[in-house]
Length: 462
Image (cartoon, rainbow, N blue to C red; front, side, top):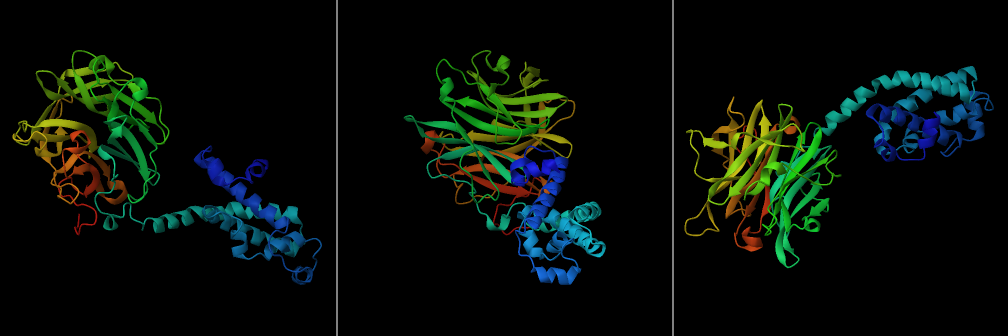
């Protein structure tokens, strides 16, 4: 009880972040009891007149505190508790009322009232889980994402081009990560940015926005975020092709998607070898370690995905076989497109890799004949080097993505929340502005089967 007295002046939210689930529940009970008892005995609520108390109990002297509490109205008592504490305040109130009856009959004082109340409280608290469950059932009526009342693009900035997006969901909040291209220090540069939202309608200010300039980089780009072995890991790459400073891969970790560790290099033992440009990194947790994929561009060699493995994020990483991954369509052949912006994806006990496949227009290099997400499934016993049965997602063209429908997409299995897979992607209507990235905006699509897709606000069963 002394502990409850120490914390009774604080809001439960102020202390809850430092407690385990069990400690939070126990502390909330103690806190609610102390607030009620303190208010009651100090007569901070409206109390009946002395003659009324005497008329009810017969002896107002010995039972004064008991009667004061007994005469409180429910709304007066609940006014002592913040909204989120009232569910536990109710059984406390019931226990006190029952104890008051015993006190009235037995002419007991406040100390006896407290003892009886606590005994009844322990019994009544057994019904709290049922009350909590009923509250959760009501809360579930609110949709995971208010799909009918959304429309694409779900995120857009008037002076930023945003792409290379990723998402994570935690405790009712969605966290979005993306590359933001905008003029900075005399040139268009890429920045890695994180924002949060609860409804894809209103967004926070950037949680972070960095470009690596303090370490001599021109920019940072292409974030991917995965929950790996209980920690959120964000990967990204340097951007800008600064002479004498080849691109590197990086990662940061977080427990809450808000506070991040300082960035560290990733697979530097592989990427610093030779004259290679490395971008678009993603990680997967499997086989007791980390599989890594990134796009390698070496002069004179077609750009290609490389696959490596390490038991630790700090490496060293080693290529799986020759490290060259094959991405094959359903006919067993490569589709002949460039592959980039990789993301490892796991669902239904199957590993996949999501890519953006593209092919430049032969007449205008700034336009694409193909630029779309493709999904490839890991072939058994291929040591993570053969990905087959590839196919593309058929996404609708809307007003924000007339020139490029879906670029740099990321895929999430959120079926446990509402039965859908979700895809976030960038769309644009030009390919000239923002260092020839165009003005990109972010859209959402969802599917129950990874084949049939719908966009927000669309009249569809999907």
